[in-house]
Structures are given as structure tokens and as C-alpha cells.
Image 1 (cartoon, each protein chain N blue to C red):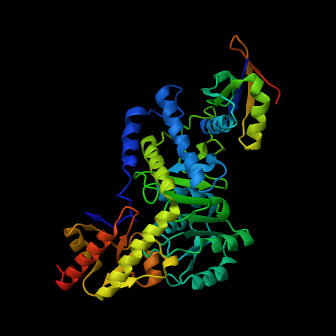
Image 2: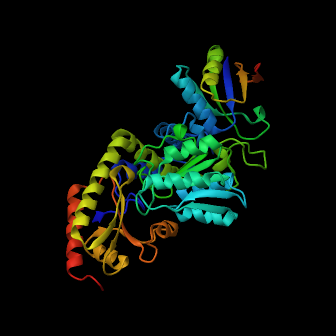
Length: 83
Length: 375
């Protein structure tokens, strides 16, 4: 499984990606599926779900705000994770 | 050509700037508008430019770095975000029209600290006297006419003590003098990309602490379902397709400034200016308006004792020396210094000028003045 950390804009997602990268957490910047947000275009960083807890800690420590977190299963389906 | 008009635009730039611009034209699409390679490559460069600016100007959060067309654009956004009609705004007597025209258009009442150039103590005394009557402050870091460096640390402390929001116009200082966003505590700092940051024309940066009001409304590639502009920066202030080629050039310019070091650039420009001032003063045919080294950046104004500034500038260009004459879009500065009737000839250096160019310029001026240059 992987986890998608959703950000409010491309710049926020880029900042998130940099913070994670500097913390040794590999991630990929993607445009979020349309149905994950009710506010239009959004970007997210896809990471391995077993790094999610650490990723959230690193983002919080660097004040890199994210809007929601989604878990993606092997079929590519998303389910919102606990905040 | 000897280029001495870097206060207008740093025509002399590192070759990386032009290479970055042309490379971007060949490789980049629009950032934030697609997930394919050329769009994401553009987005990566745009973000790196924000990170570099945040590092150079000491911002903890690169999302507070906003791209603008120039310093004027940034100042318009900043002023409209802080100032309302009828507010009293304290300004130095050295402000550019990029400050005073937006303030006038908003119907703000300007309180002006009109003390002589290079007299820092007089300025601070006048500033403090008027500050209690002010709702906001807008000041330039360096006079674009005289090179007078205003005491921004003291201004910051005085504004901070009273909780008065202030805006810094760093048009002449960014890249040439240290500018520390965190330490200064200004609400906004506006700067061009095409002067001391050695980027191309059409680029600028606005560093934001406070809430900002958009000047333009439109697509941002985010929050697209909403009719309102996004609340968060930088998208709130960046409607429409960005100048990615310009931003690529700006990144290259800022990386050069970082590598060479702002202190080293300041030292070099200071040495060149001091040589120019000393040699021109010895001619005796010009009024050289200068101050102590620590109070003057790489900008110098002179007035010929006979003939006009425009004629002198024309003759200089005939000899291959590029300078600017007139009011330099800052009539307030000339009113303050008493030079409005004549204007001045402005000579402004960059880190790429050489001592040999300075001596050659002085030699040419000497010759022009000896040969009765009046057309």
C-alpha cells in the first residue's frame, strides 16, 4: 500500500516533497485524483504507507501544512486515513 | 560600452542567466497545469527559485516568496494589502514613484521625512517624530537617485516597538546589500529580479509576512472549483501563467549572487564607487553628491556646473558610456535634496564593472567638460 499526502497547491506539495526528501523519505509528486478533493485541482506526494507516521512528524516539525491523507490499495482505490 | 546604469537594470549579468532563459524556452511548459515532464520540470525550477530566494533573504517558508513582474508590481500588491484610503503613511523623502503613486491613488495621506541625503541621524530623528502619527510605513532601503542607504534596522525596531506595519522597497539593495526578512520584520519586502539579483527584465519577488490582497484574479492551477482566489500564498498572488523563462534566469542570477556572496558584491561595488567619487570630485567641474562609505550604495548622482545633465549624458553615450539623466522616476527624492530643477546624472555600478572602466569614464568626463560640451 501507499499513502497520498494531499496539499492545497502545487507549491505546498513541492515544499512537502522537499521536506520529506531531506528527511530521507522518498516520494513522488502527483496531481491528485479529482474525487479526492471538493475544491478542484490539487497535488499530493505519494509515499510508502509504512513511512507515513514519520512523514507526518517531519511535515509538522517543518510547518509544512497538508490538507488530508489517503491510503491507496493495490487496486488503486483511495480511502481517507485518520487525521 | 561602459555600462554604468545598473540602478535601472543590471545589463551586465553572468552568462548563466541568458543560458537559463533560452534553455527554459526550449524545455519548459506551464508549471501547475499538467503532470507531464515539461510542466513538472518548469514547476521544479520555479520551486527551486522560491527556495533560493528564501535562503538568500532568510525566510523560513518558501511559500511566502511570490513572483511578480518587477518591484513596482510587488509594491502595488504590498501597499494595497496594508494601506486603506485616508490612512496616514510615513515615507522617506527618497521614495520612487512606485511607492508614491500607489499611495496617492489609494488616497493615503503621506507624511514625509525630508531630511538631507546621507544624514542618518537627522533621518531617524525626523522619522521618530512623525511615526506616532502614522498608520503604516513604506521606505526604500537605498535611494535610487543618490545611493543613500536608509537605516532599515532602526526603522524596523521603531516600527516593531509601536506595532506599526511597514513595507520595504528593496529595489536597489536586493543582491547588493544584506536583506534579512526575518530580522527586519517587515510585512512585505518588494524587489526586482533584473537589478542586483542579475535576472532578466520582467521578474521580481515579493516576500510576504502578512495577509495579501490580489491585484490580479484568475487561474492558479489550484482550488479551481472556487470563484475566489485561494487564501494561501503564493497562489493568492500568482494568477495566470508564470514567466517561467524569466524565473529560470532569475534563479541562475540568484545562484550567482549566492556563490559570489552579497558581502563580496557590496565590497566590490563600494570600492568602485569610492574611486568614482574621489576622481570626479577632483575634476572640479561637477557637483558630486556623496556621503560616507557606509551610508552609500553603488549609486552616485552628479550635476555639471555648466550645461545640463541631459547634455552630459548624451555626450557620454557618444563616447560609449551608458548613464542616466533626469529625475530617475523619483521626483520626491529631488525635492528632498534640492535637485529637482536640474535633475542629476546618475552613475551606478555593478559587480562586473572594473576599475579600468571607472578611470576611463572619469577621463571621458574630464575631456567633455574641458571641451565645452554644450550642444
